[in-house]
Length: 313
Length: 313
Image (cartoon, rainbow over all chains, first blue to last red; front, side, top):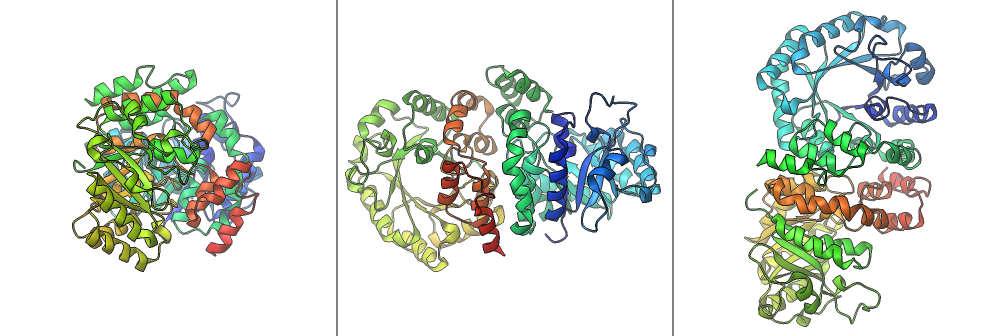
């Protein structure tokens, strides 16, 4: 466990539920609590391009401008690397300036398997600018195995990325299947490291993360209270004690769980909800379940459960 | 997975949160939905003695009189065995009549390791009456290893019980430690089967249940929405799909999750709550955390978190 590095993605992934419109005071408290906890990376948002997203419709963590980061992060420290994510096709990696003029230390590039060439190109540009880079290949539970193999081989051969994460976008994985995927990624990546990003539809995100480590993964994503799209992510407060962080370093995070999180949870309603369980079991993108939640409809009464059961049978 | 038998304990364990005062309509719907789902055992409550508990203070599922069971269960079927639990020291096993005059097919005897002789005696009385019997040794994460070994050896030698369950009363176990315990129980029990009763403080109840099966366990406890004391149990709706039950048999249970469960959850507040996380991490009985919940106090602001952190350090 001592080799495991935890990446907090509370603001980046939680922002998928509120267009990154977080209260500034919450983000300030979260940054302080997370940096104090022993987390290795804190991903504060997306570095999206305003070419693709209008700033009037999204909060500041969709763009993570350097001025915003300067204001909220203060100074670099030796413990926690400030990280941003870019989505292939929604960002221009060359928009980032040289790393030595930014507080950002690492950039993660998210893509689907067929977009791997663009992702690799982005990591090369970013590495030339001085950033540590990572690749997240999304929706792995429905990816075509050949496209996935090709994607991993391409990263191994052509990308400076330090690690590639197994991303259980649909919350469908079990510990057994997670182990298999992590081993496959490690074998295909020829010396690069492997990470894991879990989703909690089936309350297996933490267990899958521990299984990923057993299989050799060294980077684990998590967010406070699991905040994130749909059923949410691996809960940070549960993961940190399991990787050996002493409780005494977690008091500020647990305090936030009892002060700010209940209000956010009530408003954004990520987490353990029946439509998300059904989506996880059926290996579906969460969009239909999120739509039911937005409209206040039940998974059973709306017919979503029945369709999932018929598809399974 | 085909050897695994699931035991539903929603009413029995959920009743710890409301003194077994459930709405009759809810229990009727739950019985129908659970029997339709493919659950092998349904534990409807405790068969406690009115010597120890006054019927005016507890609901009917604290006592599970035969007339009540006749009314709610109807007829025996081949699929689901109606089960009751007795607590050593709070029940008189001889109060149960012969099994052939009761709808009850199985009785589980709950005890702590030092009470094992009484538990074994109870299983002998119950087996003579014609019931299938099981033993749950509670609070295993803090049991003295020698007392536990002695307890298991005593059951192996002197009890007709079919299986003994590993009971993670404090919700402190991980998949790794669960596997170790299940293997130890199997080795000590000389041919008897082993079950697992998880608690969900660390969102590991389902993963621990799957790990228990990997290690050879054949009985798994669960309750709808995990309803139970404190953080609750393994969620039945998550466990059944993992042991191979097709979704189409689960529609009535998922329907209850969207109709009756949200109201019960709001009232009884079992589940993922910060005080229960702290209790699980600290390997504490949930009573202090339940007291904080009752009084509306936070785990951090009340000092409970700080005491747990100090004890760990």
